Length: 242
Image 1: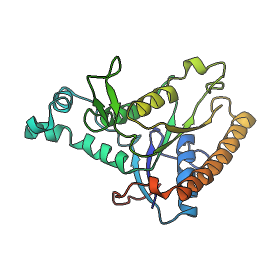
Image 2: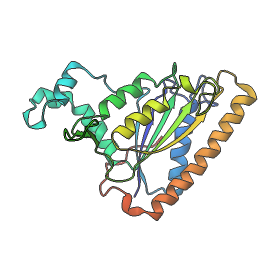
Image 3: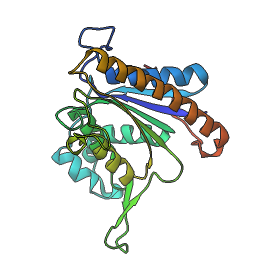
């Protein structure tokens, strides 16, 4: 059984086309998950709406705890890392990470950055080998293939690779860097552009993104069905899907 971890990072709780000021990125992520489950209802989904329930920001106590060897941690340190441990456990259990996120001011929403900071953890998702030079960091999530699907909505146009505004897009590049750092290298990206333009430009972008989502679901499912040995042996209990 394949397991999905589904994150929505938009500050907008509703769906574009259904709710006033609704979210296009939520539309894409929920389409991906619903299409996946329609074809493979036996698979599990853990859902986190970090846009409405953001993870905690890294604090002094978090830093002190994370960089203290586990055997020396005091009870308060374990408490400081409890949320991070839950988020890391969810990521470790996932075969496919689905991230629905808008582009805010050239980067990721603060809620998504908080999630990234919680899951990039020394000793849990990245190790250190001081004999390696000049890069001592060892990704710990390269034990098996894990896929990440980044579903983005942008107000402007041309923020994708090769676009006129690509140099100002620090959302996907930032996410890819962080995920590669911990060992997740199978990245898929689909974006909607033109929210500020609207009209036919936005409608065409939405339609194209939906087609790409449907195609990607089929491709990934075929890949997992062809290589079931890549799936994790244990799963977290399935949460309600979006």
